[in-house]
Image (cartoon, rainbow, N blue to C red; front, side):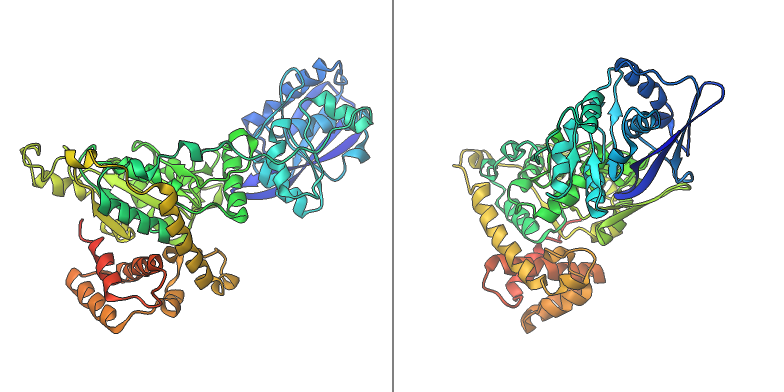
Length: 507
């Protein structure tokens, strides 16, 4: 007696089909799972046995063999429980094999036959819809699976008994409705609550309008972290395509809140003790890192100089390419990582360099030693670098400034200008270009025209400041964003170049 159930394995954000082949044969009683299972998969036989026992179904005293094909692909995760259980039920002729054909199945079983949520349901659902299959997934994951398409047939039972009854026709499971994640927008601080720091707020607006990386340097308590936390509230909303891409990554990592589609741009702020695999991705099971979880959103690195040097240097390639490749002896996995880096740091270890009454006795050497932790190639990839000084008492007593909603309107208009500019180029690129920061060199030359006086100013400044070719073109991108915020400038003027230059003075 044999049966076959379709399921999947994950390789990064890619989905690979897996056949769960179940055979019941004569011989000494045994339950064997083969096909490179990890510990979680190997233990599924105990969960499956207990779940079937909870339904009053005993496994036959025969040799039970479960093969996960292809056998040379590592099988990781608990989502193989449900397909193994259904394969056994089909082989025992408790349920019909033909009723299960065309379904992609995933789910974890509890000992009382409940079906628990698992990671990766959204990419599995998209895979099933692409290949004209149907999907069986846990009830708690049905809300994310529903976004894979209206034509996808989805069964989302809360326990194994419901699923068996549906297959036998004694119960009908309705299709789940798509869910949206909880409202994160309500927890984002308003920019109006930031007192003073007008220069920093202007720089933050430019960074948001063009997708530029930004570094803030200032003493403790000057508002660097608060400024960064306001950024998600002024960015434009996600497009449907971006929401699906982000939700797929968070589904794979198990961080999709409430099993619903994400509707706000992710904001990730890992602690400075984060390891290289935690930032880039990897580990024993090669999971997405913080830079991939921040895809189409913000990665905020507070206390930048306190991160390990290897972790910081590993950001250099993803900042350029928009993706990360995790290479291991048995894994080569690529994750998207088109994120906006916002960083903050103190000017020195004590934090008060330049403050006459507070700086330590080692100043100014302590500042230079502290800042040399950041390499030139990494700083070269940061478009905007600003000082965030202490806020004066008079600033604290000032009324509230512009709200995030007012600033967001200007940024939305700037994004619309950029989307129209890059519309013709997006037909021939693998990654969509939405903002100036993502424009490649050849696109830059075709779309970003400088006035003669602006070109002269830029060339003189680049020679005086000894800018690299990368920094030179990043300056042009920032100046183009400043011009887009003006809404009326077809060309980049010397005023735009001058303001862009003012954001590269420090470090």
